[in-house]
Length: 47
Ligand SMILES: [Zn+2]
Image (cartoon, rainbow, N blue to C red):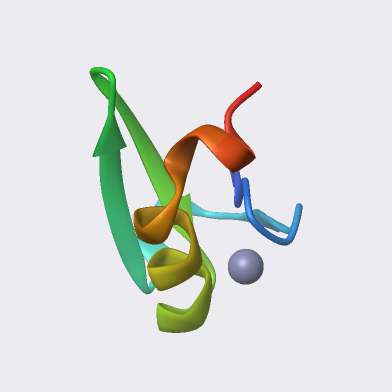
């Protein structure tokens, strides 16, 4: 299981709608909306 860094939801990798790689780490998202928010400002969600 992975945690969507935008909304905090826990999701299975296979259920992820989108992914993004930031500083060598792959992040998984529950929705396209979350993926877009992350892509716009990754540093905001990675702490
Ligand atoms: Zn989400």
